Image (cartoon, rainbow, N blue to C red; front, top):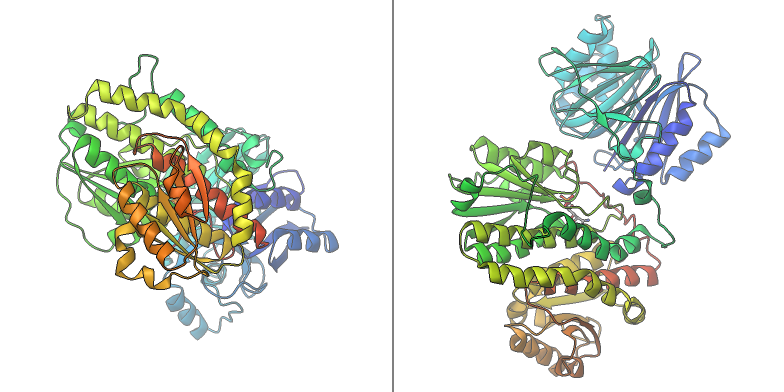
Length: 610
Ligand code: M6R
């Protein structure tokens, strides 16, 4: 979703802002802009489309100045054109604002101001912020009072930055629900949506908390809590792992991240399995007593992370025998669910910023429940607001389509369910030992699948004209079918639906034809025979089948038009392997259709608004 960058220092602001905006590009956006204070006046450059359009504009019409704000906008209110792009202004064009989130009472504020002859030019909710600042600023001359009064007038979830011509040394900020990080280096200050947008000289950072607001200057930061009390931020060091932001020879981040999966799993093994063969979660922060007494687990998440939760449910029920439910966080937050003691709410989120998942955590905590989050960024909003935490160890994921984070979610969930099972005396050390041995084989097994990526590419090329796909799987492979379908539709724009194999006869079978390939995940497991029946049903109707099967099986390939094998393993391990050919299929279909897989249309990496 929207990305924010602010800079004050001695460098040319436009180049620092552009650098930061390119780094935030992965979040998804449809227009970009900057505002810089140039010789006392605010200069704005903004355009719809890619950041390179903005860069071109800046080359044609340069701005000079050492203080500015920049933005990538993912449209919510008003179409993605240059008028609605940020920065937005007040009528005098002396106050500029960039904003992430939604001002829920914007319509009321707008109507009130219009009655007082304030003229609005955009369709955005954001424009009320500079207009309010200008309106209140006629009476209030003190920075603290002006900002406080303006923030108190706004309802919703947001993070915003403001620059003003009559206060040319400061960038004002406020955070209430959308991420914002302050960075500092000698004589310089930065405010960004996430630390990836910092230039290399930034060594210290502070994650601004909800309700906090204030301003930065070359000299540092002045920051206040919701009540207006001054606070002293504790800065932490910045980790600049630049390799995460390079494609390292791959054509796209998505492909690079698919190929990083063996090393991601190895990192999880190194961090979670001790030399003595014990599973440990040092960062968990939940007592063993509490976990041993758990009666119920409720997962809350969205998209790919929801599919991981569905597999997590099967793991926890199997190994820890705890009743487990999976909830869309967008539903859970409004449902007033029945939650009582001895229940653990588990939030799964790659970004750690998904608005619905964050709101679910708030509803659980309001009922005094403990929340455990599986996140890729420990300092994310979801990570910080949870009672306990599990680090996914996936490394920064740039591609909008989640791949390595999903596999990291599955491996961590499998390990956590074994850990819980041991605490509850359900699973024996011997069984744990056998599964750990299988987990240790995963990096090389994933490598062997990736070494056959070309086979998937050829199948993808043959399928590129198809507009509809069905994915079928049962048991542990039902969520894999959902995930395979989601991957394909989000980056190739083909319509794809995933179903439990047993549901096929209840409707989807009506779609079978040569034009609707059926992707069947049928490893050798307890429901193998049932999946074979699904294959027969498709064959009987002259449908096209692409199957994922277990190495050594000859029957499934003989029933299929296309097939791809994965190594033999237990059914708990299969979903970690079977999703990989489906990730590759989605990627190669997208490429064959000429789509851009890293930044699919309309999608954002972190869905920070509802
Ligand atoms: O960051 P989260 O894991 O909370 O994100 C949840 C979904 O928005 C995300 O998985 C989305 O479905 C991806 N585009 C899937 O590839």
